[in-house]
Image (cartoon, rainbow, N blue to C red; front, side):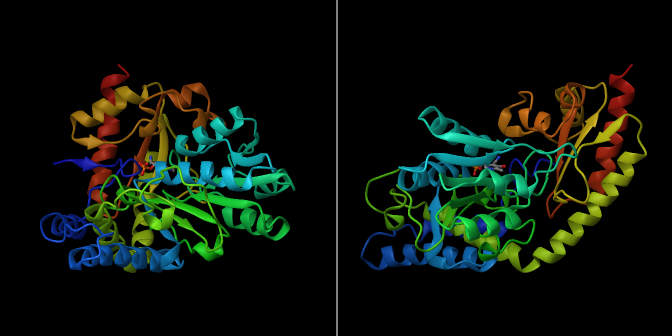
Length: 377
Ligand code: PMP
């Protein structure tokens, strides 16, 4: 049986998501833009999912725009906001630990002449909200900061930073990549002072290929995809009704039990920490008090990440080496957090889900111990 501990890469779609998607493929397959009954039935799915997301994140349903995933949401938010708000204000503030789907569009804007300030973690591996606030000035059109880092689970002080920025510079647009936080830590859109929020279905037991951009009323972005004017012109292209139905079903299934899920994740995280601390040669790269309980980055000293990853795989245990998105390339994000090359070379990311059991952790621990015995010989 597989022991899947790579949930920050993607999660197993839950049964309600799969059934809802299936129904939309075999029965409710109309185009939501069609004026007839089948179109209206399909449009109802979109609006139901908008309402489910809105109630999970405390925003207006009309603020939810569907995209193909968080990579698109991030690109649309950053490139789209810069086009509208960055004509005269040419500065962008971000962090040095963003996911590539934020870092790359910002790099592109830098090539086009924007000034970019990237805030790095301090010596204790934390982003100081004062650093973000003081980097913003009258010339800043956009601030983009993630909520939870995907490589080590670190939770950024978004609320404190964005609150001060919106107070001092109300015209500066705030964007948050909340992919690893949505339905994993409590988030209320109106309390984090983000004008734009990106989320993705496949990280919360929905299906790959759908996400949302949550855009506050009154904010505008220039669309990247132009065409038929779907999603109020923010994102043209026929909406993927099955994937959106699955997204809504996953959100509705997960959100009522969020508090319980967090408590369980904290207990499993604590158990994992205590078991790991019994093993020699392990460094835990995620601090308990400042990281999401769903992600733990560790280094098994003197064993390269991929070697340990494949050893665990041979026992049916699946983890990631650093960030799965970087396909094993050395992580610049972990370097930013102050990890030595030695620790980065041996870093693995363990990311749990609501389905993870204590037995899974026991299997992982014995897999790591066994790996040390065999691979360190
Ligand atoms: N942002 C973060 C923090 C992520 O972890 C990911 C997924 N690895 C993305 C964005 C991209 O999401 P998607 O796969 O939906 O494009």
